[in-house]
Image (cartoon, rainbow, N blue to C red; front, side):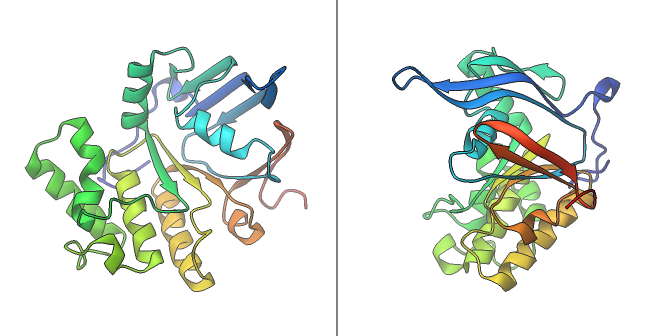
Length: 243
C-alpha cells in the first residue's frame, strides 16, 4: 500500500486498521440515551466504507469515536493495533493527531491563513520544521490540483476548491484513516464528482476511508456500505452484493 509520500503503509501482524468490540455510547440525559448499542466493526487496511442511516441513527457518534474526538461508554476501540478507548485525554489527542485525518462538510478552514498555511496546520502540532512543512504542503496542494493557488485565502476559492484544501490538510500527517463527514453536502453535482474522484484516487493509493453520507450515489463509490439504525449496525454489505 502506497501513501501520498510514496511510502508503504505498514500494519504489523496484518492487524485490522479499525476494530470495535461491543462498543456502547450512552449520553447522560435522564436515564441515559444510547447513541450506539453493542457495535462490532472490523475495517481492514485500505478499505473504503460509506456509513449511512437516518437522522439520529448514530452516524455522527460513530465518526466521533473513530476519530478519537470522543470515547465509548463501554467496549473497546483498537486503531492501528493500539487500544485507544481507555487512553488519557493527552494520549488520545496524540493518537488523533498522528493517525486520523478529518474532512468536514463545512471545510473548517482558517479564513485568515493562505491555502498553504491551512494545509500546514497539522504539521505545526507535529513539530515539523518550516522547511519540512512547506515541502509537504506544496506537494499536497499539487496532489489536489491547487498548486497554483497556494497564496490564496479560503474566501477567494470556490466551495469545491476549499474542500480540496480540506482534503490536503487531512492528509498532511499521512493518517492511518481518513474520516469524511458529508464531504460533498455543500457542493453542486459537478463539483461533487470532482471531489469524489479525489477520494477514489486516495483509496487507490491504499488509504483507508470511512465516509458518512446520506446520498446513494456517493455511497455507491465505496467498497462497503454500512447502515446504522437506532445505534446498531443493521446492514453491512460489500457493494455489488445484495440490493
